[in-house]
Image (tube, rainbow, N blue to C red; front, side):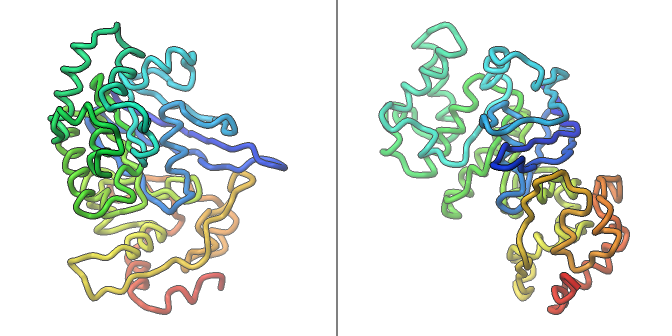
Length: 336
């Protein structure tokens, strides 16, 4: 089993006239067999962080600082061929859209074979046995291996991708919004499969999602991202019950809760900033109803508090902030 350690990771994209900073000083650790959900709005840096863990950033992206260690080895310093060999065998990926990730002109069995041949000596019989075993593990009939992707439903394709990612029993699995676009019944099937496999195989799991409810179902820990930073990280139950960062509170209130059906949902005014330079102030200050002068001139750093970590100058006032979020006029303070 392998521990995942990310330290002070910063990633930027080359753009016309300069750079766009997508991930800024992100740090977290995940013990072997642990599960972490990365949540936040679209554009907050979740997928950039996920692809960086796999060494699959596009050519326009560059890691400007930091390290990514899996089992003690810094993946960023590995030669390209060494990193390629570790993908799929030690760290694997479940993409957001199986329909795009799977080849439409090859049977699922052939695609399993292609992955096998890239990492192991050619052995069609062994590869077939392994593929059938994994299809059973994700509750698919082994006969479906001879089907083409278009012959499967969306949920079946997603489970087939999960099976393929587990071909060599990787120690770490990165799942990038694998339930997006699926109906709630199929989402439940996919989540149940991931939960059971993660428990049985003791995989380290990083699950990327914009949906807090999905992360609450699957992950023991949660990291809330905003504008390239982790603004809060703690056990999932603690973040949901008593969030410390105003953005975590607002994100929590933007999803329905069957335990409080009368509670109104909120929409956060404004939009996430596009950062052409590393931030020097709180990245949420322009949209935060509790921002003060210090927030606009001094960047808060993650610090320990109440069993987790939070990047807010005034997190000790979280109780009063949470109470204010219950009032309809709380957003009148934004920009004041």
